[in-house]
Amino acid sequence: LVTAIGFSWVLKHPAPRFHDRFELPTNQQIDSRLMAGAALFGVGWGLYGYCPGPAIAALAYLDWQAALFVASMLVGMALVSLVPKTRTE
Image (cartoon, rainbow, N blue to C red):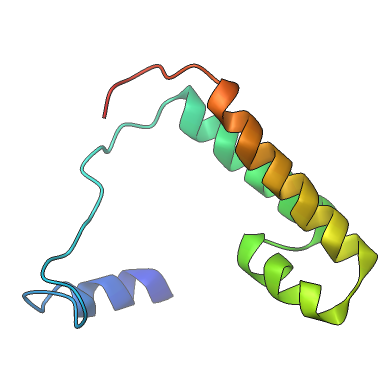
């Protein structure tokens, strides 16, 4: 709900404040790669309780579990290059 309200307000402006134009995604297709990525994101969030941004911020607490989560997230980001692309963008 917050995003819907925010987007409707922001997109009434001709351009973002610090860029010459808006760069919004043009692909609106929901495919298996998107669903799998969303599911993995949800499982990670559900198991540990962090999404990526707050997990990185939690490193400031010097908690080994937050560090393990961020390290695992980085490994996953590196491994995604091994997944074949199914569409061109």
